[in-house]
Length: 323
Ligand code: NDP
Image (cartoon, rainbow, N blue to C red; front, side):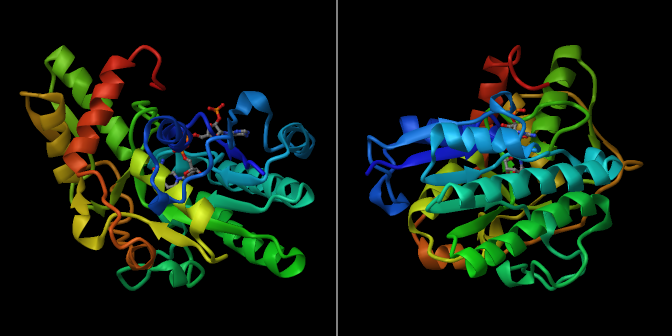
């Protein structure tokens, strides 16, 4: 029987990368290829508001998915997270509760939901691994979003133990790529800085980066993540989450990110640092040892190449991109 794979949040950064990967990449057997007659459905909020149970059930009634990649979420950068903690908690809890209930009621064979490294405790031993999720409070700056996401893992175990559901989760580190949110105020670090740098180049002004540049982060290219999601949906046997990330040695500072952006954008002007702005958590170094045990040979796209592709996409799609 062909599978029907429903991707919630299918119009976002990760959803678009999955669509691109399914259409363009010869997704080899190591990623657990789905059959050619499998049907992939990419949802946007226009198909229904997943904060509403009736609308969510109607979507599941319509498509009758056998598999779900659940990406839909209220997502935002550091400053929006700091300002709207209750909204991030409540919207994400509503979305997750409805999607999981609908998946259970419709007999979905397997579902992967997307967490984030924000779920991990603020005070934790490094490198962080999957066993750390519930070991202490998350960083204060985004505790609403973090607790909402943590609960997904609790739901997955409860659904499995009470109903035998095969629901699991992925924990990607910082994601970037085509179709990202390039808004100047409310975006993640890479798309926000790419947009700023392009404007600085166009206007002949300095490129100003918020914070000190010292925090460390691991970044994953959305198209690499897409391959890993497809693999996980087909092959990964656990209910427990898995960190989907480049290795610890590939962690880089925000200063290195800014320098790579300057190069990719071919910006020749002055770079300044606005140290009055918050840095957020200093580091969140995550281990990809579990992933490596399953997929020792997976090749991540080199950061500079992935950044170049993302910048090119943004330049070509500036008028239609989220800005
Ligand atoms: P985006 O913000 O790019 O996309 C969000 C998606 O969710 C969109 O398709 C949006 O639909 C949909 N959506 C939002 N609210 C609702 C709603 N109420 N009802 C229905 N659909 C809704 O997200 P990303 O692709 O960046 O993130 C995907 C997942 O990855 C999320 O779960 C996020 O928490 C997680 N994640 C993201 C990271 C990152 O760096 N971006 C890092 C780690 C985890 P529409 O387009 O119609 O608005």
